[in-house]
Each structure stands twice: as structure tokens, then as C-alpha cells.
Length: 431
Image (cartoon, rainbow, N blue to C red; front, side, top):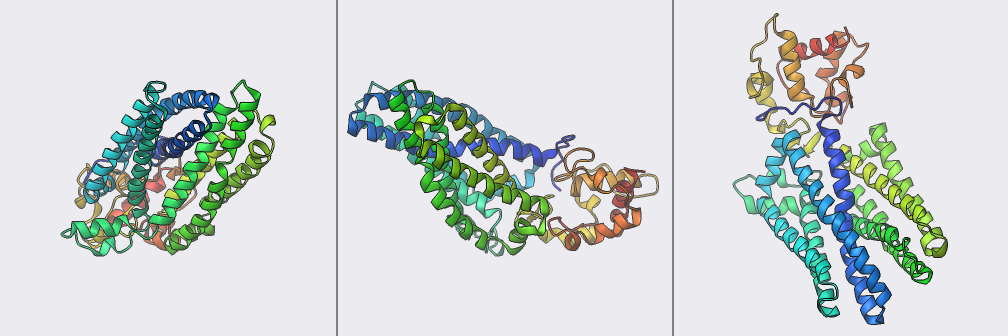
């Protein structure tokens, strides 16, 4: 309530964040897995004195560099831009709580970017072993960057005892929040995803080779990178699901039908990739075409999209679990808002007191503060369609019991007069 609301017509802020984040996740995990792919495969080529394999790696590293450094970096900046505008309170909390974590991650990011630029620029200029060491330095920087970010992302769902520690003990609060209950299962899942994407992306470049023997060898080799991923991900996934909060688990397993469908699609798409990777690149590498590899990569993107959507959705009604609701209202501020009113606590509203003349305008302002982080009016998750056909009395009843009727939505906080103003405004959308 300390910041203005960024109004994005039709798509809303949540969908914009999701769009940018999914692209970044799909590329950034390849940046990690692709790093170890380059380092290990170059080591293999050096041991075997395989010049053709080294030539392939030169071309693959160019593709890797352009994708991860250009599009990956731009989408990373895009995430900071969008979350800073859509969820400024949550972003501020993450920065202030983990400022040294972010600082360390930025150091690893600089190492990562510097290493891959040097790696690509020094093909045939450094001796093979030294060049390979630079590749390993890149992978170390990329993976350690993932290690840091994973702690902050998992904290948002499984805060553990972080909420019980006062901000006057920042060191203790940092470590308890960072090494939260879902830290390690999530890290193992993301490691598996990185390995899988390394294989899927390398199939794209491998299937473009002209030398049939080298092409078949590399297609099969790249396909085998998915095998450890499909062993690691299910085991870590079961561990992860067993640890997340009960409500989050319930939402993904029937509590919210749309989330359940997306969770099921994540499993189905993953099984499709596993099956076709086995039947294609691993068993019949010579018959695996570029179109086939591209199809697998597209399905991989679909897995990333639905999985990230589910990961965000199960955190509802919070953006930081048990601390801050998805509309940026602090859980501990509930009594204050109920006593003073939303309009008196919120800093960026044009109405402070409700009367007969401004009741609809007041309802709109309350909607912006309490609802607009998830709902648009006419677009994605549009509130107008959702309340169509409801009476004003029924809307008011829903607002009184939001947390009981819809467990994935934050409770309404404010005075009775404000609640009725919001109900009237919502009713008038379809009048």
C-alpha cells in the first residue's frame, strides 16, 4: 500500500511477469546446463583428440553465447523491471532481506559473463587445457548463481521460521530464510532441468551437422543428457511436494482446477519428452531430424511454462508465504487496516473518505489496492466476467468470506463501508 498501482490493461501485471519469467527461466537454466555440456564435451574431445567434435563445439558455443548472454541477460533485466513495478513491496522485501545474497549473485554473474566471452574469443588461441579450464570457470559461476537465486525463490513459498525472527537479527533471518525447507529439493529439480535443457538445445545444433557419422554420434550423445534429468527430477519433485505448505499442495492437487490441470500437463509433457528422446535421439540418432529436435525443444518450453505457472500459483494467497499477501498487504497489518480503513492506510488513492457522491470512485480505488495485482477488469482473469450475474448483496457476502470460499485469495481488509463500496462498484460493472 506504500506504492502506486501499475495498471496494465487486458493482460495485467501477473501475466506480464509470467511471460518474461518463463522465457528467462528457459534460457537461464540452459545457461547452467549448457555450461557443463561445453566443459565436459570439450574435455572429451581433447582426450580423444577429436578435431571434428571441437569444431562442433566452436559453433555450438556461438549459439550458446548469443542466446544466453543477449536474450538471457535482457530477459533477466526485464524480470527486475516488471516485478519492481507490479510488486514493488515484495521486491523491496527481497532486496532488503537478501541484499548480500544478491550482491554475491551479481559477482557470480560477472564471472559467468566474462568467462563465456573469453571462452568464445579464445578458440584456437589458448592451449586446449587452459581453454577448457575457462569453460569450467564459466560453469562454476553459472551454477553458483543458480544456487543463490534458488534460495531466494524457494523462500517465497516456504519461509520456514523466517517470519518469527525480528528484523533486528538480520544475519539469523538471512540464513533461516535462505536455507528454507524446500531449498535442496528445488535445487535438485533445477539442476535436473538444466541438464535436460543442455541436451535439448544441443540437439538443435547437432541435427544441423552435415557429417552423418558425427551427426549421429552427437545426436545420441546429446540425447543421453536427458537421462540423469529424468531420474533426478521425479525423485526431487516428490520430495518438494511433500515439503511445501498443505494449502499449496492442495491447490495443485484439486483445490484449484486450473492449477491442477497445469500441474498434470507438466507431468504429461515431461513424459512425452522422455519417451520421444528415448525413441529418437538415443535409439535412432540417424533418423532424428532437426524438426524432431525442434519439436522436443518446444515441448520443453511448454513444460517450463506450465511448471513455472504452477509454482507461482500454489503460493496464493501470498506472494511471500505467511508474510505478505499477493496484493502486497502485510499479514501483520490486518488489524490496522480493518480499524483505520484501506483508503486511510493506502498512500496512492484519490479518495480518503466515502460519501454518497464518491462511493463508486472509492470502490474503484479499493479494487486497485486490493484486487488489481491479480485481476484486470475486462482482460486476463477479468473481474467483470467473474461477477457477471451476481447481485450486490451476494458480491458483498463473497467479500466477507473470501479466504473461506476461495482459499487461494487474500481476505478483504478494510471497513464495512469500504467493503460495501467495493461491492457496489463491482456490481455496477455489469449493470
